[in-house]
Image (cartoon, rainbow, N blue to C red; front, side):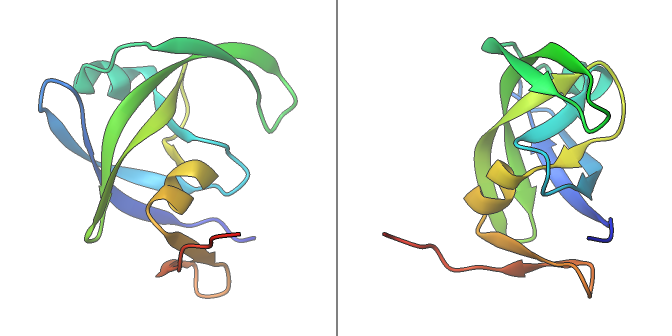
Length: 116
């Protein structure tokens, strides 16, 4: 799938809001924010979770919660706090916002919810 970016508004527990450029990455489980952005938002670690990066490196990263808004959709979602790198919009946040990815047009599209 081709990579593309979307703009999202992130809000932390202090009410601070930052507009961020998010790289859409359906291979990432959660939203991923670099430590610098997490600190700017005042995010606090809830727990730690083992992760494996796309390069195959294994590590343990903090998980926090952040409020995410893209277009007219908003949700509180868990996020990994990464030691560096770009902010990534992962599968859980995409699905929680009911977005799907159009890889040809490189854009997000509205999706329906599914019930088994």
